[in-house]
Length: 162
Image 1 (cartoon, rainbow, N blue to C red):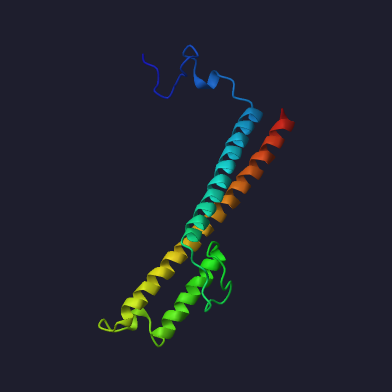
Image 2 (image 1 turned 30 degrees about the vertical axis):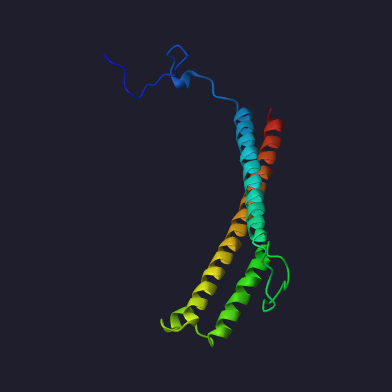
């Protein structure tokens, strides 16, 4: 008669069923999970910091300063999410002023102001994308710090259990 399919054996244990093997100690598994959390946390923090730095460097390399019509940070070099947001507001207000309060969709196709409104819309979208990138970077750092704290806490608990 054949053995039931549900009986499995582990390789390297002489064919003994998994149930016959002693389970790994809980503190060993906790240390493994803690180490994984610490590694992931470190990667997330580094990834977030790197994303922030690359985004800031990319904005700064364009040499743009915040316009005088911005609600804040006038004259500042554009390299933070707050400055990028202020510049988007300056672009929006400047475009609306030039088009008599009309948006791109409201401007006739033949009107030469439509090209300027298009450019303003594209510039705003690009800057808002950088604001989102800064937000993602901040989220990565926050999640990474959470993983690091969880890993340290779990390692501490596992150390006491051993």
